[in-house]
Length: 104
Image: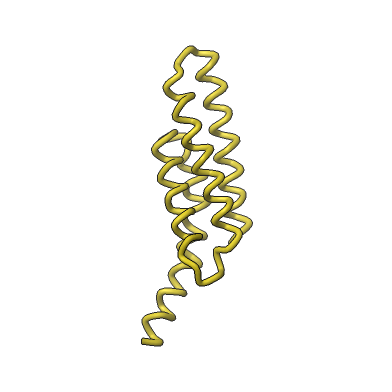
């Protein structure tokens, strides 16, 4: 699952750089400026993927904030990287929540 989140983050970086390149060519700098938010979000998602299977909460926080920043920055262009980051995170998170409910 970590690998899929990292692939989503790398794909997000590539899509963000491509959107920024086309924004500079087209003289539409708003998409280029928001592309930086998507790059930051992708990097946060990659960093969060390194410790996703531990019991810490900071990894999930980084992944969720990274997805929100990416979607806010590029909207439609960031749908695939967001799905590649969100689905594996939920796949790991839901069994953790289920185990916490049964132990209490």
